[in-house]
Image (tube, rainbow, N blue to C red; front, side, top):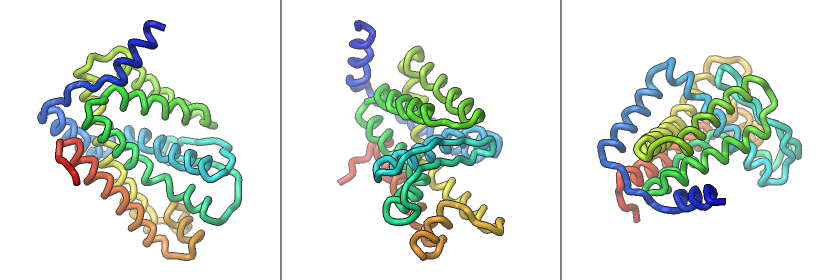
Length: 238
């Protein structure tokens, strides 16, 4: 009980906002991770986990029954839910994937801008635990468990300075990685004969061009990036 009380106090107590060098340095590190193909392929699994969590969360929100989540070694993923194959609920479920990392990054930026570093890390930890409960393949289990171990290490044992740097790095990664993933999806759409991307599925569900949905998803991700970046660097938004 003492440990729970101390942990809750630490989560709900704002810490000092890190220096500008930490904020800028973690942003540069995130750009490096996104720019180096090997690092991007490795870390993109984290983006996929949040992407699939977005599908799953909205599926439950609109009344669909969740059957499971899969994360694959090529960084793709699949969330299966049962319900009406068409209609607003299905559209919302499919549309939720790509904006999910951007919105997680936006929420994380809001928490960090107010000093709630540990609360942000614990929120990610809870998200990963919830995904773990729905994983239905071995590679996905491994990927989620690795993410879980890293987050537990950060939240429980890491010094405050390390927690702050990791929290900012993760936040920049989600904010910057979300629009990159949308652009990557559009690039892949050009190279395949049968387009099964989220944008294509949304196009078929709504009888609109898939490219329109690429634009919508990209707009949401870029907007989240701009607002989140402003919060992280300390700008006061109206």
